[in-house]
Image (cartoon, rainbow, N blue to C red; front, side, top):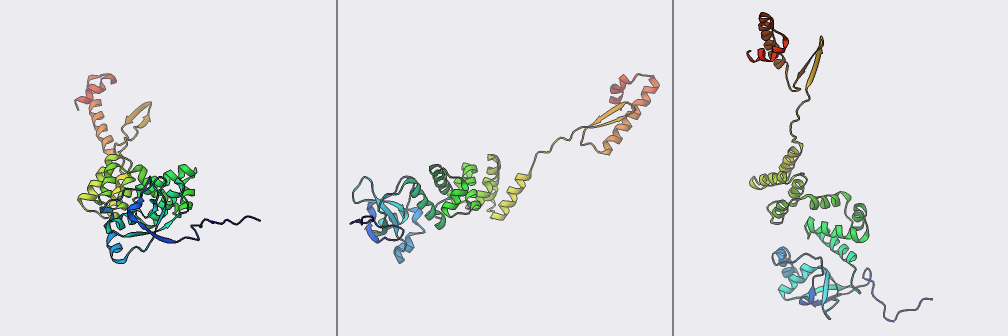
Length: 276
């Protein structure tokens, strides 16, 4: 029979209490994005009027007694600090591992759409490194569809700096940035970005532009065409039309006539053609 613990630790999945803590004692763990007053603009009005409806998830600070690290709720902590109010939170019984912390952050940010695709991609890549997981396993672990995850990671890997900066400055929307990021060359992304911004293009129009740019290929030089008759081989450019052949025949006819008069050998043909 297993001994009964006199001080059982609560299971955060089934047994937790919401407490109120001093928001000034809440810190951001490594890897969390920086919270600015500007980033709180969509959160402050509702917190001010309706109060905090969703508790933060905290764990004890490893170095400062009475202080906490925010596994989730960093923006709420900053907002309540600005408002001068207590922060409602659930306290984890122990500090999460880096992998667990990333999972919490991805779950909160992806499903509430708080973070950009670039921040999510960095977290997912780091989680895959820690767990030795592939994209399919990462998608399953975080409740994200495989196609969504593929788009998030591909965008972060291929987007050029100018496109990312335009998206983060809200000059283009995330979907437009993702479409432009699929163009293989930097100059192509810059051209599509310039069109999108200068003409204030919508997603569908940008998609058409990107599709056309991907399909644009340098014209290939057609292979020469060879024709052989009576032991003579004629080599003509592959892009010639029959009009070109007709014009050449007329020139050869004129050169042959002059050659007959002079009883000249065929070696003089090049010089005779110059006079046509």
